[in-house]
Length: 552
Image (cartoon, rainbow, N blue to C red; front, side):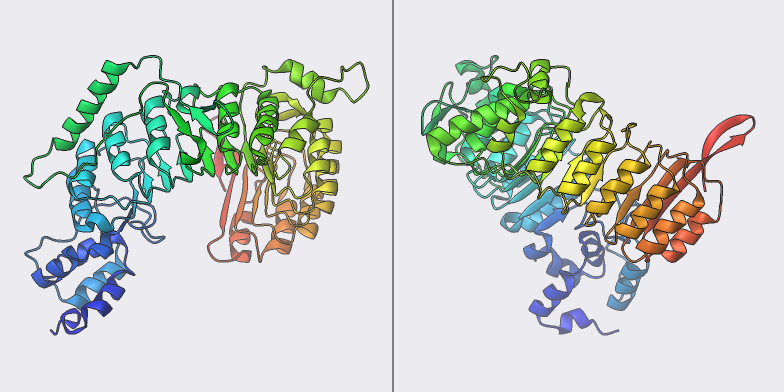
């Protein structure tokens, strides 16, 4: 049978193969020796290594089971393409396969995403050095515990000149790693170091004067420690089983108390430090002071910050504005599940109205709103008594362009605060008030009357009835996601009311652990909604004398 690939110009062939996922290209290499040589020498096909999109398409959601048959078994091009289109023949990637793909990509590698692959080790990072992968702009290596901090630092430093996106959450990096990163990655805009337990406030510089910043040396680092670490990095780079030459730029970790001009730091736009136990209010003050004129997203959820971090942000913002005349550009602030017990003095200053035995010099929430005027998304949920109706009303009155707010498990939020959100925030698209027991039908109906642009609504564990569902269906014509789990007063009639009105837009509907026992409601919802929409539901049933939740 004629090989059409061999008859086409190479440019056309590459255009065809670039439309395939990475694992499919790997399968095509088994067709013939000519196909193997063509694909093996086409670095542009391997420039994006992404286990979520480049390797996994929507139709390939299952784990990889096996690779294509061995190279000795030749198949016609039509047979291979039919096999690729009809089946998901995939296999687990180990160190050897990743190293082989890195070798094929070489300097053309621009994106590497290998999240949650515990089987990977340091040989992958050595391959990045060996094959001169210095043009990586997007690097994700989350939760790969076998890769040491030194090996990660070596790989990141090698690609630091053009690096823009870096995600190393749940790894063993430390303060010195982050300090070095800030000094050698001038184009970095997105940094995710969530759940990195060794990262503290010392990872971030503090301002010395109007133009200079200084890094605090880690407490366990001295000159001999830095020299030892430098030597270990170079040894790691050289530890490979090949005679290929090693490519490694000169490495020079930061010396103690090194002073840097602020303009030499990257223009960081997104910083995620979720779950970092060493990140406290002082760290947030440093972050907003140094990166405030470029940073638009900051996530400090589940860290060691207290609610008085709002005061720290506002104070450092005013100081930064006096020094640099640059406003804080923060648009998204997430601080869920923090220690709301700290900063009780700040809480008193916020909730006490103006003029009621309150000294003039105390900090108020209005100071934060003046310092952060462009906020469009805020997440301050968690089991707390801090978020009150007065607090939510202040947010709603100041941030009228708010797009997203997360207030889950705010124990002192009631209908009046929820109604204020709907009245003052007409552009709101996402709301999460799950677990806010003070909100019921009255608050939900008042809210949806004003916020008609809502796309995502989470109302879990509320004492709402079909009245709220009818109001949601009548008012929210752009609704895409609705979650009413554990709302035990809802009936199938309420669910049908929402689906009837929102069938054209609703993509995700969830009513798990409900009192609805109509087994036909889920099938009816799926038939009414658009193809691809997700409907999940479960109800309490008695099995062998035990009450368990069973899917409908």
